[in-house]
Image (cartoon, rainbow, N blue to C red; front, side):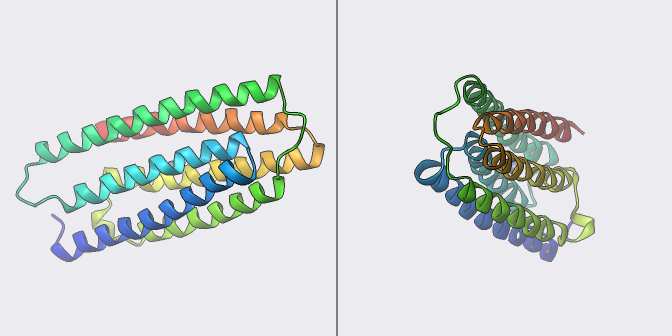
Length: 203
Ligand SMILES: [Zn+2]
């Protein structure tokens, strides 16, 4: 059983991670909307927004009164995860579709690849900071959900890396279709993430 201090520490770790992720998703969404219409970046932006939702849920569950039974907690957690998984699958479908279109009907002009690459580097850094923050939580408090969250951030790192590489390829080969391939890879990552979260919950 976690002590009061450990619970506080967990809530604080989630709070820090949540604010940083919220800021990141705003930067990504802003860049996608006003600076560079990279579908891969748009996918990562949607994904960061879903992450905020998941983190907020984890924080609320960590904060639930201790008087609640395990079953009551699990039920709330189940609902929270259900919505998160559904959003991940929907955004994967949307991003996959947009990516497919970009491959088959590439836009005549390239987007601002420098902006996309800069944002991707920022999000790689942010993912690393969040990973450290969640890992700093006391070992005893590393329950299944916490482990799922840590594995999730590691996966996020991979997705930001895809955004960086695909924008780099667009710039290097002057071919916007690479953004479409990146988007398909991000969409696959979102589906895998959804599956991972749903299987992590059942254990
Ligand atoms: Zn994520």
